[in-house]
Structure formats: C-alpha cells, structure tokens
Length: 110
Image (cartoon, rainbow, N blue to C red; front, side):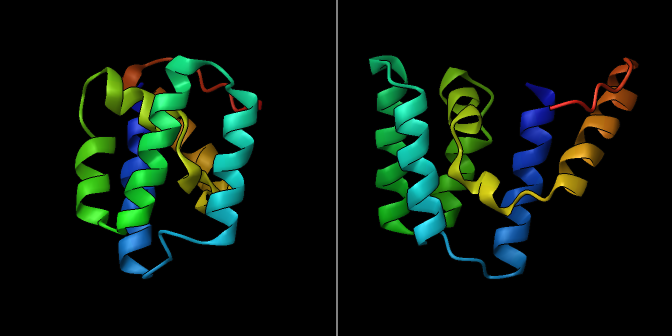
C-alpha cells in the first residue's frame, strides 16, 4: 500500500510537471487491458470510475481520489492506467525507498 501511494504521488507530480496527457491512446489501451485482466464486478466499478475521471480531465480530482487513504484509493492505485508513465528505473527506486522506510529487504523482482 505504501509503495503504490509513493509511486502514484510521483506519477501524478510527473503528469502535472511535464504536462503529460491524462487521456491518450496508451491510457485507454491500459484501461482496456486492465478491464480484461480484472474481470470482476468489484474491480469493474473502479475501472468505470477511472474512465469517468479521465473523461473529465480533472487532474486535481484524480489526485484527490487516487491518493486518499481508503479502500477506493487503494483500488484506484492498483488499477491505475497512469503506470504507462512509470519507467523501470522509477519502479525500482520506489521499491528501494519503500523498503528503506519500512526497514524490509527490497524485492525488485517483477
């Protein structure tokens, strides 16, 4: 949970700082793939919410929902299409930082 929140905080800052598109073919493709892989009604409602938020283009509202410390925020981070902007280097760094903060070994596999 901590790592996903750290990653998404960074991703949202990157999107804002670099003026990256909230809606793009890559984002829509990631949502479609996620919908196929997580084909359960429980996850479908979060994917629907992602589509609604992307349609609005409101990064502040997306940030508010995605970074909230509740079940919805956690599931939105888990199913986030914004990982298309996550480099492997940033993913590994987030694992190492989270491990250091939590005092646990960094498992950088997968």
